[in-house]
Image (cartoon, rainbow, N blue to C red; front, side, top):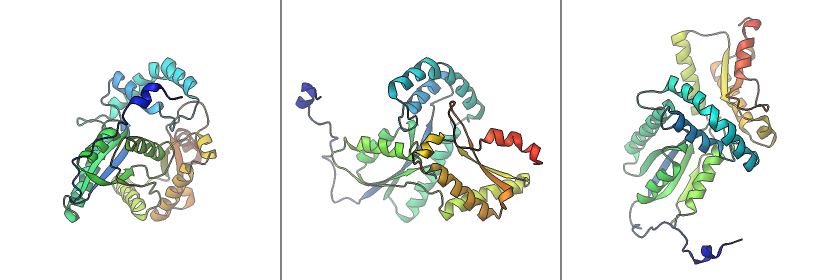
Amino acid sequence: MHKLSEFSQMPPFAVAADFKHANQIKVGVMLVNLGTPDDTSVAAVRRYLNEFLSDPRVVEFPRLPWWLVMQLFILRFRPRKVAHAYTSVWQEEGSPLLVYSKAQATALQEELDVYFPQRFIVALAMRYGKPAIHDVMDGFRQQHCRHLLIIPMFPQYSATTTASVFDEVTRILKSWRLLPQLHMLMNYHDRPSYIDALAMSIEAGWQKNGRGQQLLMSFHGLPQRYHRAGDPYYCECMKTARLLADRLGLKDAAWQAVFQSRFGREPWLQPYLNETISMLPASGV
């Protein structure tokens, strides 16, 4: 039911009075990664986990019971453990995910500037944490970007990642007066250029460290019930793995696709990475 005050308020649409219709059309390109805490402190990790785990796309569970579980258990105990893990990989410049994602955005901007000077504006955003999608899109709006290209940096589509980015982008656009033309990349799990890039990275590792008996291709896990509900993530992961194995010329016995980062007690996508590694010696690997 609407409150009386809602009928007396002006709609909060962003002002676009300074837009110049004769200007060259600019394209905002937003690379979106998952996110990272601001630093390795327990407080920063708690803020990040709270935002991440509060997303109903990530945790499909009744809101009130889940909120109680988060506040009474997860956010009281898990941040310290996660903060310790971040400390072990943190770089001088910050989180590795943020550092490498920024480098990718910079490289893309430089490449586009060669062919389309002053046409594209590339920026990095994080779905959770900073730089926030809202702030990046506000920058695009202030720079009069009439086209937006959203590139979630998740090769395989999942409602927990790509769809969550779409939710946030469209939520923000609801407050814009002048809407841009919007394009969004859904996945790229089977694109030849992506498979080639993976293969080149693995081949470089083999050249440096030697070639093992078996290649484990590890993907982030997902609850099995999400897969049963129609999320295509598992299928797209397996297609990536098969294409990569073919590209590397591997026989079926020389590789496995596995899943990591299980959270909670319910079954997740299998086989699990940790269990697979523990069983390999018994099979002669």
